[in-house]
Length: 528
Image (cartoon, rainbow, N blue to C red; front, side, top):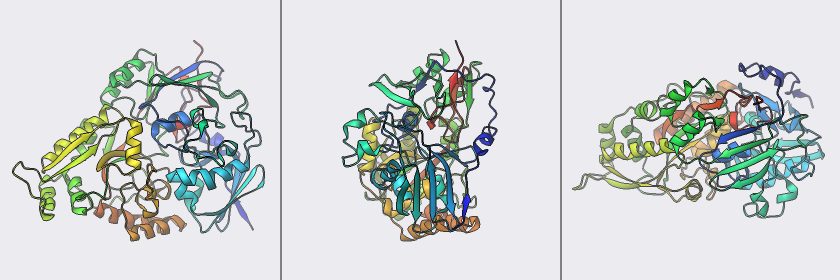
């Protein structure tokens, strides 16, 4: 069978020119520590068991996937050095790097890939479960060759092998165990450039250089410290007084970013989020009345001023969202019907449901579980409470820590909650998981935790994943977006545009479309 080769030796070199690197003025040198913020503190560090952003940032240096992706979302080698796709799109063959060892010294082989993609990840990881459900067999004809055979073509499959989407896990540690309670979870073992050293709860997580890393001379840094700093003002101050080198995602409150941009020793960039295209929304538990009625969900969209949220809460570092696919993603339909800010129309919809105001002016009382990711999200929750009160919906705010939030949402123990998820390069990978009924899985975060069911949506997502022509996929995703915008499974808020802020003496932090979640094996700092 003829095959078309996807990997070219020059691709990685070409990718280096996608972003200007003012920092590439000196040869990388070994030594030094990187001090970064992690906010909130992760609940655990095993990437196959937890997809929260804080876990991904830290664990992205411990674990690796078969591939990484450049700024244009083109696949680049990681644990796989080369790969081919058969002409019929059903067989993917990966050649693995022969020099990789787990942090405990055991060799990384094709058996680990088979284990991770057929046993571990399908049972714990909502993104991987969706992607690898299309695979009929995963075989290891050689210790360094893995062959995936699909039941039908799935054109985005090559995008499914990033560290966050499909982290490789050690078979010799986990096979035959309860993955969630394995004692090794306390000291995670990966193949990445940095090894877990210690975790001082409430203070910092320390990773140290993997001296046996498979890339010659790398990594350059001795250690990475991820500091837990709960207070937003203290996080900004730590950057200003140079005790912290790096902040990212929502570490820094949007109101503080303009001030930090003026500091000559800090650089601010929006690069490194291309793979994620993060989209925020109000997650709605359809199992709870009256949330299962689409008129109520439509009223939520009409009662919220998303431009106000973008401008006044995120200070322009966001833009109003209109539907399930971000405007930065392929197949976004710019012609979707809009939900303008219209509280009067929202009240009309609520009246049509029989949700009339009582003597106190209240139509319903709903609980909103706040997102514990900093003061900005607290302000978003407070704004939602104020806006919905105007249309007669009384909101009771609930606050918990990040671990409890994840557990409650995964177990459907919420009514409304704030959330944001990553779109992961293609709607078939990062979008469909939220809305297809086969991904309603109690106990699994970032799945269809709302309980939304629509057989037509299931059918359209399935079709869009297997057709290869872009115009056909675009037509199917347009249908999907129009149906979802009408049914409002979640109330979309804003497309997030996170800043990464770092000290100018630290270099080559952002070298891929996964930014600070990547391995940092190229990162180095100036001698001081």
